[in-house]
Amino acid sequence: MPALSGMKDICDYIHRSEATVLEWIRVRGLPATKLGGIWESDSDLIDQWKKEMILSDSNHKKEVVKPKKQ
Image 1 (cartoon, rainbow, N blue to C red):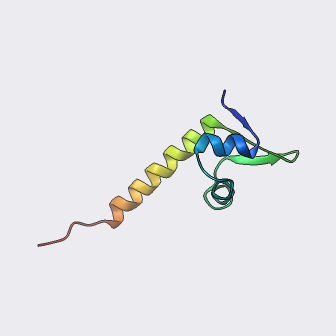
Image 2 (tube, rainbow, N blue to C red):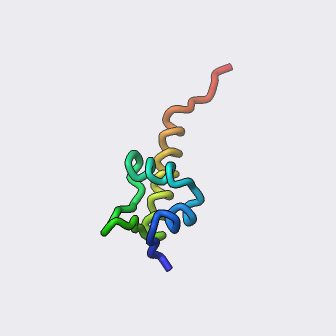
């Protein structure tokens, strides 16, 4: 089921602590929101977000890392 209700469900799904998940929501745009006092998210949205983060990080590293001349 794609719906994740509550911080525990979200943390369990992505295997991270609550502190990390809250930081990722604030800083990195993890797709989750608090509705009626309960954190809600969607596993499909999180999977897509993770793919975008991986691709973004991978593209950044490719631009920064240059082979050493010998």
